[in-house]
Every structure is written in structure tokens, then in C-alpha cells.
Image (tube, rainbow, N blue to C red; front, side, top):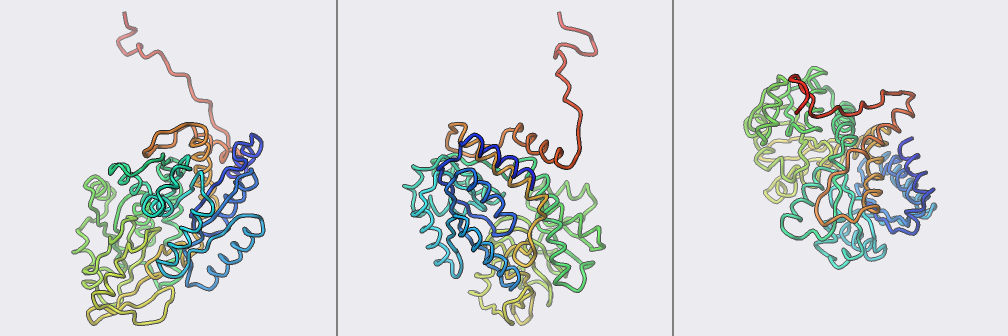
Length: 394
């Protein structure tokens, strides 16, 4: 991960992170540990909220091993496993113990916990670097309601994050993971959401022979799908004939109980990336559905007399059952996270949601290009704005 290594080296040299208290809520993978250790080695005091426990023995074992290594290196690990209440208590313990000055967040989980349960701790915060579209959305809602007292940098909106992690990394690993747990993928597929993730999933599924329909609520995104040759239908209509439904919105209850009930028997439902209850499983169980088999990578849910199949228990299939996004992609995303940290500690930002300046994106891309042995032209200096096809101005 040359970008993370180089940016971490710069932090170590200038000492700007020394003794800074940083809390992170990130999916536990080997790639995550590289980011956390870069912060730790630069002098920060790092605490990790480790959630996203997997039902897959191999993935769960890997996560436990990473946690052990991180603790041995001096990173404080708080395990957010078990019930929602147990996970919340772990998060609150982290906030109370670490008293973070800066948060690296995924889905605004720590931010929501802090604002909703322990808002006085916001007084310590320089700001938050947010990784995901769902987390940025949550921060924007907080700000609109006057409940965001700190700056949040929308790392998700960075060109080197969305353009690579969302568009390429997540879509690729979703397809590879589904291929490992399904007999075939050239089936009738509904992709819900045509953003960076959903668009990538739809294109890749079509590329391997699936018959892809897109469901969208945004008319511009829907029109983009039409211009790329996809059929676009309302989800209520599309789900009835689908063999596979992939939610790529990052919004709670994208797949509602009625969609599960109206699907054919054996239809597979999966989440790309995602948030808690993107498939409304708790609501379905409350309405009378029941699990029809043991917890597994593909689990049957019995609803209205038929079984539908839920991949990864409704969690993000690419990181719960699969290995997460490729290391080359996450190097760029975590590079953007480190740049967001730099932006927050170097500037006194007002409360609200801020985009990462383009120069930070360009710096990440330049490091990555150099590490790959590529060089590019120097940018041309802007010409005089007064020069046009009519000649110069008076």
C-alpha cells in the first residue's frame, strides 16, 4: 500500500499526529490494519471499534487474528459484536475511554453514537473523516437539523475514493463473492441503485451474461442507466421475476418486506457494501417471516409460504463473506482518509460537511502512479482568459 506508506511517513516526519487521539470504526481486514498502524507509528493514540463479525469461520478467524496483532502493537480494540445493544455499549465504552479528538468513520456509526448518546464529547473533536455515502448522507441530515457541531470531511466523495473503491472495488468483489456462493450468475438480476457502486455492479453482471434490470428513485441516475442500455423498472415490478436482487443504495429498508414477500421462491437477495437493515429483515421477522435454516453464507428466509435466500445474513456480502475490496483500491481510499486527517488538523473548518480539496486527490493519485512506474505530463499553464476566437479584449 504505497500511498498509505508514503503519507504515513510524512506524518511521522512532521510530528503532526503525535499524541493525537484517533478513534476508528472500520471493517477489520489486513488492509485496515495498515492504515491504523500508519497512524499509530506516526505518534497517534489509536482506538478501533471492531464490528462486522462474520458467520464465515475463515473471515471471523482472520478478524480475530488481526485484532490480536493490533492490540500487541498498542492499538486499543473494542469489540462491537453480539446484539445491537452490546455493540452500542462497546462503542460508548470506546468514546468514553478514548475521548477522541478525531474520528475515522464508516457509515457515521461513531458520529451517530456520539451525537445521539454522548454529545458532550463533541467538545474534544477536531472533526470526522467519513468513508461511505451512507455516512455522508447521515452527516448532511444532522447538519440540516442543526445537530452537527463539528466538521465532517466527506472522504466518500473524493475522486480517488468514489472513482476506484465504489466504482471498481466494491462492484468487482460483490460479483466474485456471489460467484463463490451461487451456482451461476447469468440469471435475471435486479440492481437497486445506479450510483458508483450500483452502476459498476450492473455493468459487470451484464458483462458475464446476466439479464440486468435497474431500479432507481433518482430520475437522473435512472436516465443514465437507460442511456447505457439497461431496462429500468420500479422495484415492486422488477422483483417479481428476478432470480437475484442486489441492493446498492446504502439506505435502510431499500428492500422492504413486500419485496421479499413478492419475490419468487429461491430468489437471492444480497447487499453491496451497505448499511444495517438495508434488507428489512427485522421487520420481516416481526411480520411473521422466520429463518428456515442455520446461519450460513446463503440462508433461507421463509416468508408467506416460500423460501427466499439471503446472502451474508443481509450484511455487505463483499466483506462479510468475501475478502473485501482489493488492496490496490483500498490504498487509494485510505490515502484519501489520511488526506482528510491532514485537512482537518491543518485547517479550522466550520461545522458542516466538507469535500476534500482536489489537490489532495491529485497528490494521492500522483503517489500511486509513481509507485506503479508511470509518469504524466506537467499541466499546462492557463492561457489569458481574454483570448477568444475573436482575438484579444480591448
